[in-house]
Image (tube, rainbow, N blue to C red):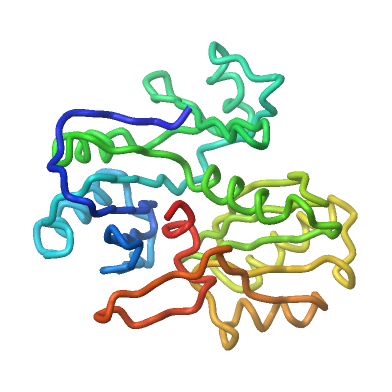
Length: 274
């Protein structure tokens, strides 16, 4: 179920995608020709509270001219570790809290929702940042929201549907990374880890692959998000894993003249639905 709230919005053909987490936020705008007209990212460096993140968002919308336009499509993407994956045949909407309680500390008043990955018979059950949703409703009226895992898993499973190999995807951001492992087009693992050092990152990566009996000489590790080839996380992974590369979207991004092009693995989640 793609989460949507509605009110009214001006009829101008421009799209906004914004990703929020407790450690950072990013956004991009795309015109009617699917050209990226603005893209920005801010890393907080520490984990904030949802209330502090909302203050950051309000400040950004108040000061950034790119966010003062009217948009026909607005998508808010929640990035957090407050989620789990449920096979669709086993899913029951009445059991949302039960799905989460084994992995997440669920409070009595937590608002729990779910996204459907229709083509892959999977459901992402998660807790969104309700205060941020409320701000978006008050500001824009109409918008759609979903979880980062929904965007990542849906995009990567579609890309890997005809693959005959095992691929490990690490979507990197400040102090957090998403790990998705796909075996011959089938989802084996989707999880999110918090880290402080490159050793933390390596530990979670190697532990997860070891639990699935994956051989670092054989599987492919594909990096997405905020990472470069001279990054310390790339370098430490390269010492232990033979096959490492950077991912990209199936469709090449188009840039407006004012935008400096960036590597195709960067901003992967923001651009996945354009």
